[in-house]
Image (cartoon, rainbow, N blue to C red; front, side, top):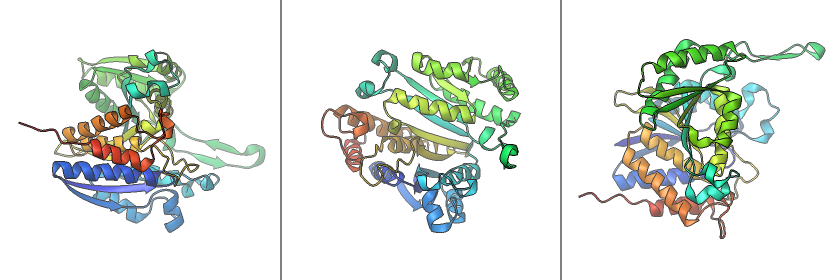
Length: 366
């Protein structure tokens, strides 16, 4: 298969972790005989520095012509007080809109080797395996009207949480389709006791659920869900929620994995005739400028995002499983970065990438 991939390393540690993810992608492609075509573009703070635009037109064109896009992280402290259209994060929102990726999938899994790294007691974290499905193109982040107006005592800010029935339906179908391949349970999260937006969300999700009689649906208010994620995280299989709630809950899920550096994500949209999904893949963590350039960052979230890319955008399950197995073997070996609290000297970012590649071996078939 020809794998046409765009890489957008972004800012801070994004450059380092993307380098290791690409190293693993090249290795797995060579191991299984795939042709890999790579392009690199600018996004975020580095794009502002070089072009004045967090999402340059050239990057937009590269993304539209790629089969899949692998991102690092965007954001730098120097832009914290910049106007909204000159912030690195505007580039991230722009590429999501351009690619029409409407569902963000964030797998949250506990590893035996990392149980002591989680602040939760081992018996709570052990066995956690869920996917948080976050709607990605609606809600407060995109709704209008929005903005800051007036001055003095009359200054006010407005953001609008807006969802349409079709937006809710399509992400709900994706969540139920994923659940059918897992433990057949969907938990829909909203705030329907006070928000009309959430009342529509709950009603539409309930209607769509009737098309999946083999999948169990339950509903939780977002505040209760946040509590249950730390009290009883093993109760969850597929968690479905809107944009803002999903953003917050998925970062809370990082606690269960032992480090936010462990979490990959896949943002997917339309489906090609082959069954592959148009996708944008990135680790959940931020740009961490305080450790950028020091070869300390954990690349496993980015490498896990490569596994997600192989699965969703290319349908290469064997290759995706091989990368995930290699990650688990390296975790068990203790060859990990400092955030995962290894017993011995911590590994560097590059050493973790090298260890994954050294562990990757194509299974022998009869």
